[in-house]
View 1 (cartoon, rainbow, N blue to C red):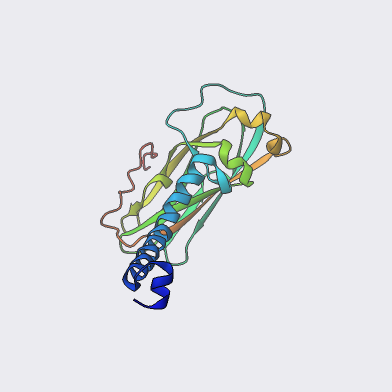
View 2: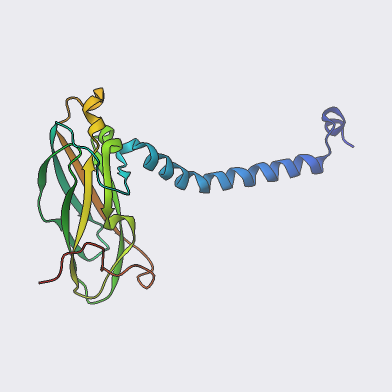
Length: 197
């Protein structure tokens, strides 16, 4: 045994094993941090992440707000993506449906996943999505067009929140990014999709 091993009471192998286990633990935690952060944001509305509701609002509030809609597509995804309306005015607790139009501009099947956010950030915990195309990866056939719904409401609890007192306008923003596996993505037959005309 070396002088250091005698002083600490640990052999070099025990120290090396501790370092390896610690390093692997930190590596595992770094991979787990992204899904854990997403789960935290989804549960709390932190960073403008909207809440996900299973049912429509059960009560309406008194306050009226404007919700604006924003749509973006990554450069390497050949889609045109836009909301049918640029904004709606609604009362808190009022369940609303807005459609987004999407078109695959390419001659091949493509797939994408929407990232979404609500601003201002403090509105995220009061913005409740009941149904959204953004919950799943989406696939479009060559030159296919579709209209996808977003069903949401603003929780009436925002009326008593000090940080929301002066907020009159909320923006729901989507950004679509390409995914690597169009064969595994859902087809554009999104529940609630408008029939093609």
